[in-house]
Length: 253
Image (cartoon, rainbow, N blue to C red; front, side):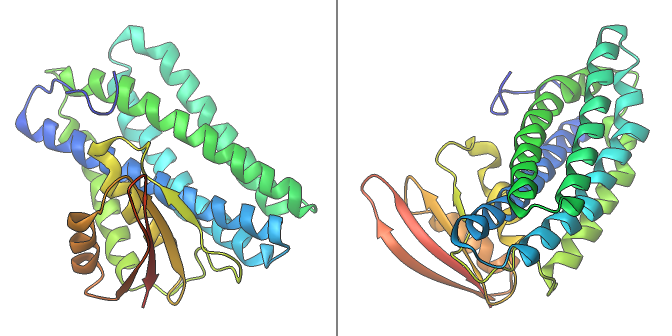
């Protein structure tokens, strides 16, 4: 099942919870992609890898790992009601441990190049992990009439909202590197989570810096949403206008 396929839910509230979780996953993945891209660019160009590394560690420590812990406490036990899911859940928890180990390598590795390699490995592992959650774990819980996915993930949703409010006006060093802007190519991102991925990537950019967005068409609806989401604190500059790709520089003001 791909993220574009319909997950059968036992209630309307659970269907809404599925979409909320998948969008949150896309935002997390988008943020991590932007931060990893910043580290890769800094390593390639000899830029300020320290700032990019610190921002990545901060994001993983304050967002990814708490999210993983919340899943282990709430979502996975609900999925484990189905005995067939238990081996999968064990592998999901193991992936969390890998993510934690890679985060520690990014933080402590003396070699900046090796720290950057660990960041890229973390991104790849996390993307695969989210695919399993979206396509295998969520359908199990959502289809179980004996479990309310909305209730199970209620605390996680509250954390998500608090995070969104904090990000709306934050001035942290997320993605802050004095090199080329991070690039997010959404042409291969599934349509259903494309906007959420961009939101997450833009959240990871420091005020005064920019994200390069590559799309297969002029993303006018997305740009309207970004303006609303940032209260207009965004500058949009077109660098390329098709026909193969649209390339925009999105600057956080």
